[in-house]
Amino acid sequence: MKSSWGTVSFKTEGMWGNDVVRRGLYAGITVQVAQQFVGINTVMYYSPTIVQLAGFASNSTALALSLITSGLNAVGSIVSMAFVDRVGRRRLMIISMFGIIICLCISYDVL
Image (tube, rainbow, N blue to C red; front, side, top):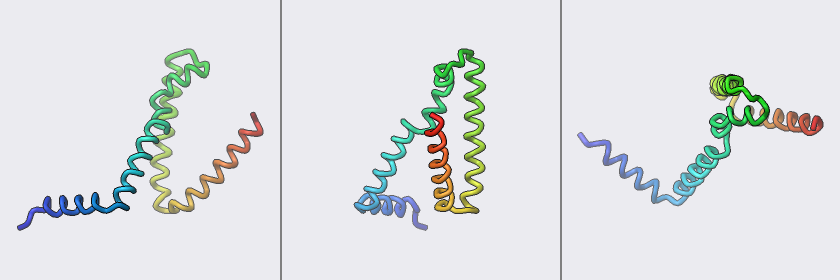
């Protein structure tokens, strides 16, 4: 019986040897690192500080608002996982794009 490690290492070496795969991997890693620094993870990590800087002086209030934000993020992630399979990524992206545009237009008029 042949070991599967030989096959895995052969496939891995083949992937690294392919320029298209290597460029795609580098692009994916770059996007992931950038999202970690500027994405929702940063907002979640610093949300108590952000809430306090917004004028809520109490630590308990800042923590409660941060927990609500994190909870809504978790619920939204679970709901979105259920809808991605049923509705499809492209349709959800188009729907969310229009939602973002509408919200930005409304917030621009308010400001």
